[in-house]
Length: 238
Image 1 (tube, helix red, strand yellow):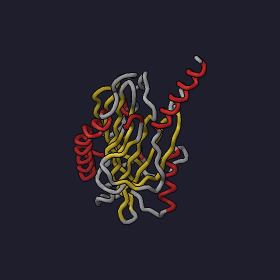
Image 2: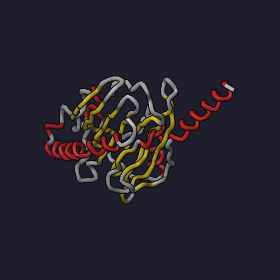
Image 3: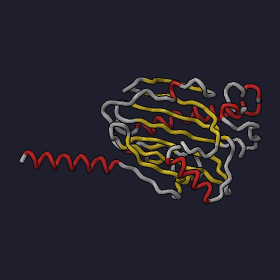
Image 4: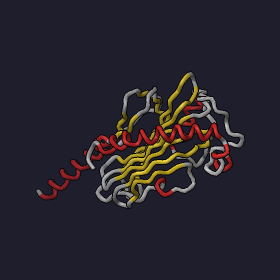
């Protein structure tokens, strides 16, 4: 009887793990205010617009905990005007997560760290520039997104300016990144688009008033968006 009960318990737990998995199909489009991406209803807020899933990948970490990562694109007249990339666990964790890498970066345009404790609370956000070019070392969902862009003959910017967030507790975590196209809003592409040489880089941007002004606009948006991201994160079990 004990063996049978144990087997039933294991199957029940396994069923719960499967129930937490949140998957999305490439090509599906969403317009709601938030999107469930992880365990226990963990969600991310969606800025205004139509967001199309361009890449999705389910994986496991080094202790076999399931994660999902996705890439969504905001499109207008065949042009990529925005991007969201996220990674979230598909089961709740009892032991927390290692310190967030974003929270300790010193090479991005701006970083705000509220906390970054291994195994406990982590809360930071930052502004960075992304060089938009296919890379064979990219994660599967990013590669899928590039395939989607190619297959649909979409135009994409040379650079995205991103607002990235890292949130974690002892039971869950979230990495989410929102990218915006300065070129779609009228700014010229950088003369040297590579990340380390770009005019958008933190060591050069102060010499470019128009780019600095754009970054300040995204920084203001990111600061106002932070409590919304955190509210979506905190809404379910901690």
